[in-house]
Image (cartoon, rainbow over all chains, first blue to last red; front, side, top):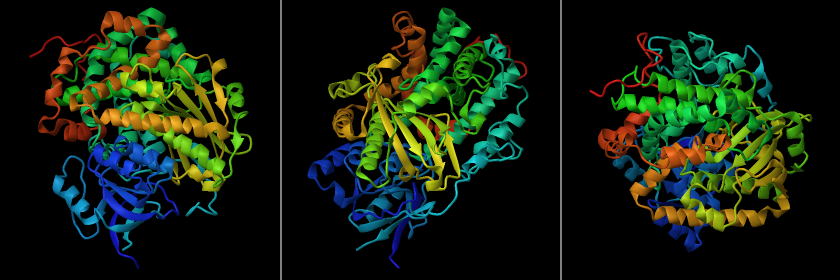
Length: 139
Length: 476
């Protein structure tokens, strides 16, 4: 049984199970740089927010999988990842941590902990469950 | 499909009188009904809210009701409560999305809410004076025989839900107004909304949630013309992929052009087809000419709107419920309907006022060239947006809400130019300008807005002492 590193809302159930190296994107410049590198398809994208615009060009150019640290399937990024059929785990939390995202009451340490733990890890997304999406170690 | 193989579609049970629908979320709503049974989402929630109304304004209302000049205080309170629940129903989960990293949306939203509540009454009153109450209803009715029109669920809903509901709620939270202020102005906004929505639906209801989340507004002969253009699609085939990829890419650009908000998207349906499949019609507004940043879309030679017909096989996905909600967005259970799309068509409307006879179909085999244009515009608009300073992003976003939400109605009424010229539509009112500095203090945009506006906690009722003529008599 592979190690589940993080869990969150599964945006849509799918048999697709993309794998890649987690790439934490913290600014629009990071997004543009990744697209220009030509290596978009090698990465599972990790972002803090659940809005669409931040990842717009990455989604449009063929992102293979997304992990967010806030938001829900009803959020704009959730809607668009469904339309693109890009597997997406939203409001992911680390299975080894008690810290959870709460709207308006979550400090930066929560996000930094997740980014530090996942960024650079080789993972696979498991989005077969109706409700829970899982980030599984694929090292 | 993955986990739905072999499951039968049960979605038609949702349309049976006694059915309460499915729960799409575990949260419940309280609003102004403290101490009473919490309200659920969906069909059951709609039934509860109707049962708690003091007036009949949430039932099917007549044309005479709609033409009356004023709501009663009970009717205003019933609409306030229902809209607050409806906002919670469609937005409470979306509101968990946190920071954008690109566009400060919570900040521009709250400024727009308040701006709308202050400024729209005069604009909507002027428009009603110009074309009459029947003319406002005719604006709504125009949507029955058009695609690519922003006279749609989200825009029509926004007049009352955002301009009145969220605007008043935000100002109450800032303690800038009292619960019995601006009663007359509230009436102006809500009457305009009621007339547009009634004219569009013509079944006596105003909102999709009142009709089990259906927005079946198009006349049959008009629908037949669109369905006649549908091409069959085999899930998993390259043609299916081309259609769904275009749908997603155009939808993404429509969000981006409208600053990450739902105004770029407009679904109607579900329409049941003779073969048992269902049809969703989707407008994707990829080039709004009043936005100066949309020049990149113009450069890419994109039309004002792409309209898509999506034919979904409910049996293929074991469909249990489908909602076309009041912000024009389709959600299903199971959630993934893309693999159940078995037919599609694409149309383009070049300008907002292009006659329907000049709206043209695009063959799915020809979509690749359009997709390239959409992707080019997306990358350029993203790059352009990423270079904007925070203040520009916030005020641009504010204009998207404050102008675009009533733009289709003013355009259709022929009063948009007058609103710009004589009423300074594209100005920022002094009452709102200084809030720019207040909204980031004490977590107002990030915490107060989600807790008050999206949770439904801040929609105070008008009191028994409120006068229908009340504006704001004093600033103390």
